[in-house]
Length: 205
Image (tube, rainbow, N blue to C red):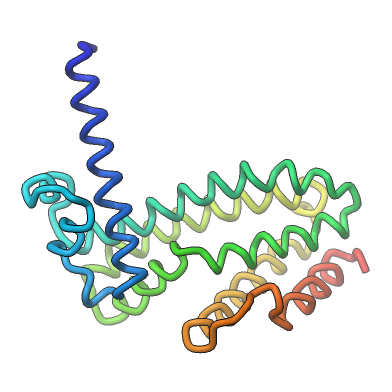
């Protein structure tokens, strides 16, 4: 491939990333309703034509932005915590550390960006049709990452899938309360309860 063409493709990728990053920032800061394409364009510092070249409609842009950040963060989580978790040689220690990792996932910007889209999708058929398959795909990526962090032995336990589902639904609900009652998530009284539940279900207590 000619060098000029490679440079053009890299510029296009960089522009797309700038647009996606700006869209996530807007979603988190001002919410779905006020995140307009004009605001995203201004935040990203790109032209109107450039934005429309990459994304044909607002809904597809916002879904792509949320997924972009979440998937990137999953890679970072896997890389950051894989070595850390491996240091916990006892299964019980490893399981409780993985609960910490899961809880941290619900206190990242991509979670709040996703919440904005979930709420909007309830009454927006177009947004829901775009978002649902992407969320299912992301869910598979997250579960694969967790399987690797918990490790082969724990992930093979008969209660493992039930535990992950229980933790996900419970943590998601508790995390939402931080929208109106913010605090230090590491002081949350649910955290030790989730760890005890993990140890019980995995027969480690």
